[in-house]
Amino acid sequence: MKTAIWMLGALLSFSLMAIGARELSQQINIFQTLFFRSVVGLVVVSLLIARTQQFSLISTQRFGVHLIRNLFHFVGQYGWFVGISLLPLAQVFALEFTVPLWTVIVASIFIGERITARKVIAIGCGLLGVAIILRPDVATISMGSLIVIGAAMSYSVAYVAMKSLSDTEDILTILFYMSVIQTPICLVFMLGNWVMPSIIQWVWLSIIGLTGLSAHYCIASAMRISDAGIVVTLDFLRLPLIMVVGVLFYQEGFNVGLIVGATLMLIGNVINIRQPNKADVEQ
Image 1 (tube, rainbow, N blue to C red):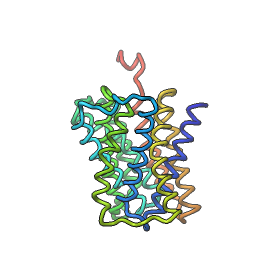
Image 2: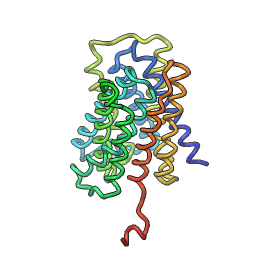
Image 3: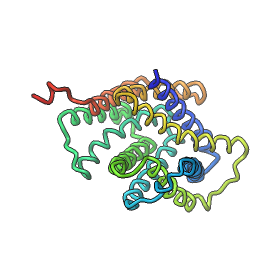
Image 4: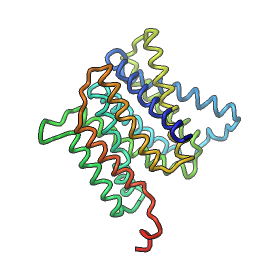
C-alpha cells in the first residue's frame, strides 16, 4: 500500500511537470524554465542540509564525475522539454522508458558491466518497442522523436555516473551538486531570452521546480520499501495517465501502437531488473 502511495505521488509529479512544460513551451524559453527548476532544487536541498546540519555533505572529492553527470543530465532535461513542446505527451513518456535500456549499454562500455543473455533480450524488446512507436516504415521519423531518444541516451549516461557516485556520495550531495552545476549553465543560456513571467507562469515554474524534486523523491522512497520490478510496473501507469491528459486537454489522439510499443519496453525493463533465482544461477 505504501509503495502504491509513493508511486501515485511520482505519477502525479511527472504528469504535472509535463503539463507545466507544455503550458510554458510557447511562452517561456526552455533554459529559463530549467533555470528556475535548478534554483528551486538548490534552495530545497540547501535547506535540508542546513536543517540537519550535515554541512559535510557539501564537500566532495569527485567533482569531475559530478560535472560529467550533470552536463549529460542537463542535455537530457533540455531534450525532454523540447520533446514536450513538439510531440504528444504520451509519446515523450513512452520514448523516455528507453532510458534503462540505454543505461545497460552505457554501463557495459564505461564501467564494465557484463551484458548477459537476459539483458540482450531486454534491449531487443526495448528496440522493438521503439520501432513500433516510431513506425519508420510508415512515415518519416520526426525530429522531435529523435530529440527525445537523444535525451534518453543522455539520461542513461547521467544515471551510470550517478550509480558510480552513489558508492561514495550521499543522495543530498548528488542533488546539491546537480543544482549547483546546472544553475549557472542555465543562467548563461537564458540571458538573452529572459521574459518576465506572469502570475500564472510563476505558478507553473514553481510547479515544475517542486515536482522535479518530488517525482524522484517518491520513486526513491518506493524503491526503498519495494521490489524494483513493482516500482517499474507502477511507473508505467504514468503513460496511460498522461495519454488521458493529452486527449482531454490537448486534443491528442489515442495511439494503440504507442501502448503496444511501450508495453514491450516495459517488459524489457522488467526482464532487465529481474533478479535471477537460485535455479537460474545453478544452470
